[in-house]
Image 1 (spheres, rainbow, N blue to C red):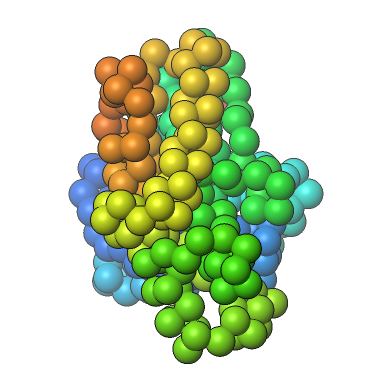
Image 2: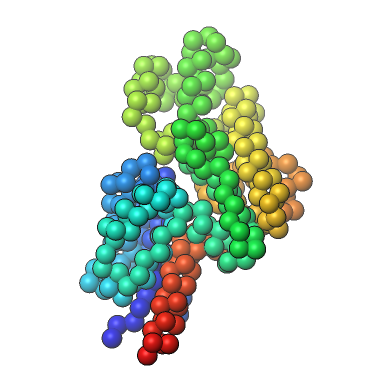
Length: 299
């Protein structure tokens, strides 16, 4: 009989990563897919997960028939909404087992390996999670419409909004507003057209440019980064207040935001022990061990 193996998927608003390991923990293959927020765009997320998994299988030298032996751990943005999560689980068949949690949960599991601690995800969106003495406390992460203040989506959207203010003469122009206007051929109507269909990931792609100009002391860029850092601080402070002994920063903005945080926090911010994809794999492995234990008792 073929040996079981594990697939861990870390899926966020911008992309997803699928990773395959064997029973001994050896890396077999990885694959990357597109956005995987099952709340924002369920069909796209499902296709992204499928594409990333298919690429990982190919890299591992496995075919789709082998999925019957796969124990899968999914950590996905939007999985905190029960109806959406249940829908996805009902459509995922043909695996040995499937575990579904939020992207924040697998980030915590990877970062702290199941021990007490907190994580702050600073990526396209932003959220926090602490698990202390078995109690789970979520912070922020209510979506781009009303939350995600420390994420790249908000930074990019606000940068474009304030570029239009500068174009109107309602705000000071800066190197950042000039650079952004140039990207749209100095035509503000193109910004409006872009915004009409822009995804969270589309807005977040402006974040590296904003950090670049902030490093060059551009006043608007400094304001935008400072606002994101303040939002991150509020998440971290809440995680510490509920008892997290340490907090790990996760996501594409984690490193650039770190230097903008107050010195008082640097002693409690610790590097993650593993990344979210390995957190998803650990979740899948735990499910396998539970199943294996039950089968051994029954046998």
